[in-house]
Image (cartoon, rainbow, N blue to C red; front, side, top):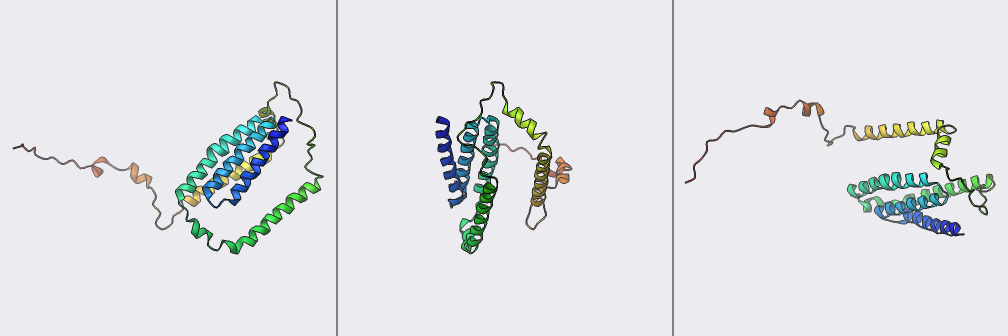
Length: 201
């Protein structure tokens, strides 16, 4: 009974946080609402006895990705007013996209005969020596090893592409010349000047 109550409480908070992400006009507030969504999702994972996934969700997404995102949002000093100009012209496209996503999700749920989960039954009792980390690793590296490797390759390509876009030559862009920095000599940078000492009167 307590688990069901906590699930509905966390689910309500999660939905409210998700609405805050898309409704908030400030990017920083949206990022903070997304942090709330991640933490609440981790709590739901804990209710499902998936401690490893909950810890990874908090450490990776909240502790690294979202902190980096907040730094980027706050340090870029984005002109929000300029971005909002002409926003209503593309509102219809956003509504059509949202409607398409809702129809697709509803179609998948309806075609699959519901979510396939019997909410009236709780989770199965697990032995004391059960490790969901071990089970996850066995499934991930046996049954889903090819999708896992494909995702790793896609992430690697994305990282290389991001670096290539960042390091491309463009006007006004200052870059370091590592070879010149390494080949520099002390006498080219420092000049020692000898002066006669003066006596105080």
